[in-house]
Length: 136
Image 1 (tube, rainbow, N blue to C red):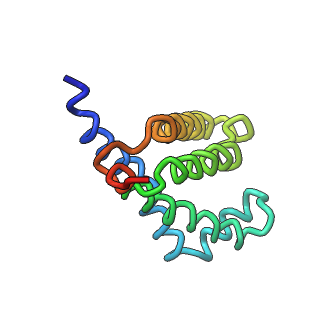
Image 2: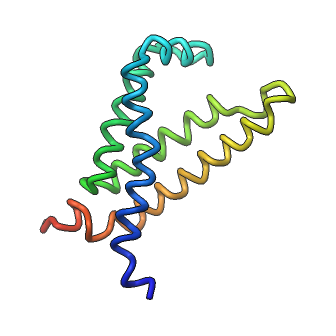
Image 3: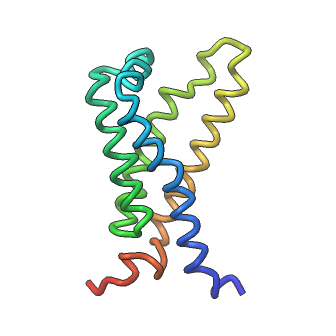
């Protein structure tokens, strides 16, 4: 039964993962100054460059993941990005006690998202994708 659902589930899974990143990329464009300020508040060097990189990754690689074009590479790039920023922006071990639960949930949610992205890296985007339609 599940074999017949692989392609629709792959498409839905890619779309749901992309839904997290694409709107975030657009929001960073619209609120660039605020994004830069937030990144700077976490001690990240060159916050303007980091914000621009975040936009490129979230929006650019998110759209590639959604379309399923170079999806394994896009998923790998987003996975690495997400893993790195999770330790910077959701360091629950460094926050006041009243913030621990919220930051810990965000931390492990992001780690789970990395896991989903790594599944795309491992298994590909499915036949209902640009990559699935290409003949190399």
